[in-house]
Image (cartoon, rainbow, N blue to C red; front, side, top):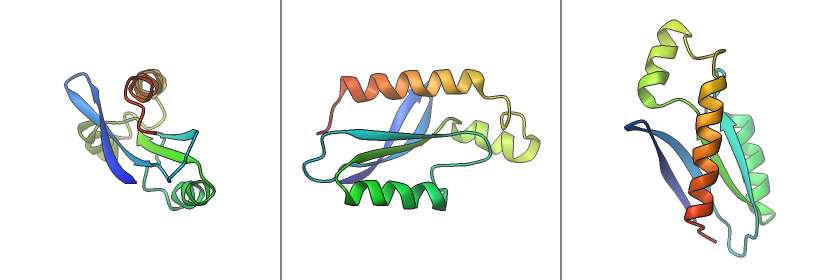
Length: 102
């Protein structure tokens, strides 16, 4: 199973890609925020390898779409993401615990 997920944050969403192979018993979470995104070819390659070997993966961005647009113009968030990391990780893990999908 592969699907895009949305994690609510302050009235907006952090988007991610969730892949759960049949029989998966664990998940590896990739968090992106410093000039990278969940579309990083390297991390998608690693996630695909993990999926083929029975591990679920969640690749998600720390920035909302609005923040990403601002960051592309100003680099405002690129290297100043401590708050975003805490926010994203905390909410991402709570979501996985609250709604397990495997």
